[in-house]
Length: 147
Image (tube, rainbow, N blue to C red; front, side, top):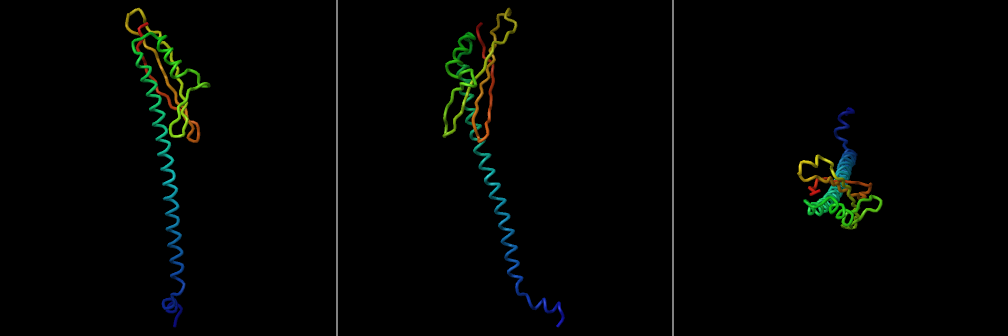
């Protein structure tokens, strides 16, 4: 019997090696899927927090837009009372055990006031949170004033 004939008839041990290679391939595939799933969950949680931050900023912008057509001092008072203007003393709201800090800035735009057209007051609202690194979003708008 030649060596090749002996290999063909003696197939002991090949089944075990085939099984080990198969298990290894499946394990690598499952590890890759687990990593992808974990990354996807992290992105989903981050997007949810970002959406909540945008909702907070939009809510504060809408609060300021309620003063549309008032004087710029009314808008500034509204900002100071409800939003705050100092990032170091930012107001906060807690949603789902995440603390979102918000504050705003505003300035009166000095356009041509002799036209009698309402002036614009520029407003920018910031929201900051940890996710686990610190993230910040901002929304900005213009509000008509009567002065």
